[in-house]
Image 1 (tube, rainbow, N blue to C red):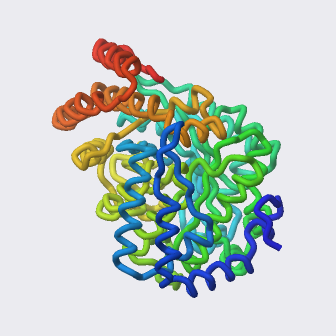
Image 2: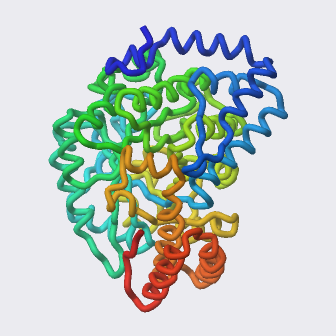
Image 3: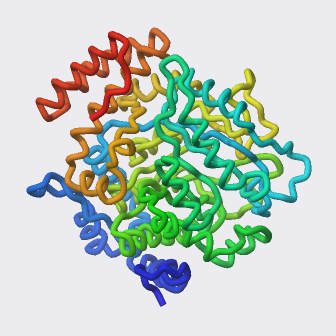
Length: 479
């Protein structure tokens, strides 16, 4: 029985509800009156508090996904772009993954770290090696990391993760510092989530991979991750442990994309219903080649056009949630979906354990092949030349604007008074400390222009003062 408030996985991700929603969508995909009403419902509207968006339910979004009318698709793209600009502006948050260990006892068929892969080199970073990796990342300008590790209670116990987080936060090299660590590790206990919260993490991210229970079991034949319910209920336990920012995601290509979008939105609705706050982020990875992994072996791959449509629909359906795209995708694909709702991207990523200290990009322990292999400086300049504002901001985490506090500010538009100046301030730090001369020239012009778009006069004045102080050598200002 479908119940979004339930804490039982099979009840808030109800297979029959998904099938009925997809059947409804197929039956109404050409219902012009219904489709028009959905587009109108999802459009941003002015209120006394600012701008609000109603979003769409999983069933409503499924109708738009099923519609094949080119005109409707273009309107969806335009609506996604409008929503993105209203709530996230031109800002694109930058981060990098840091792989701590590829030891893993799971048998996931789509991941080269699976326990049956006997020829991939296994590696776990020591704390000294973590210091070297983090220093290398700081020296390129990164301020935000997402740490990754396989599931292995012997090699990667929670104590190792906690020690690694402490090490990362302790490193200050020149003007570099990692100001926020997000965590992408296996499902764990409420007690361990509480420990992660106490360690100062930002967002806890866990991909469902697929919401289709039977496919999930087939794709996870061995290891603790094979427990569908325990994995699917992990975000609930994280919330119960005090981690109020959690991130969702599926691995598109494992199962039919219409089923996955419906399940993903149901999961977001569940978090809202059960805890009063939806996911902080939604990631949109696709199956990519890796050691022993051929995407063609999974028969549910999606085209770039379908991928773009999915990104647009996620933005329309859950307007206040951040969207993440990684270097799995090419520059061309990332360029297209940035305007359709993506608000965070990784840059200059290495998906190997110990990859950042290697002069040449190592590939023998990659979790997936990196499609966008540009340097961070190249990514920053590309974003600015495309009209975006690269942001290294971590202020909301550090000021306690997380969970329902962040969402309340986001839903009223008040967060703009913080995000726009913080983006410009952190970009200024990057330009002063790490940027190539040509990149800095582009960035200084962008900051001068975008500073005028800071709406609150007092905030704009303070931002100017902070920018001048950064010129003089001071760092780490935030609103």
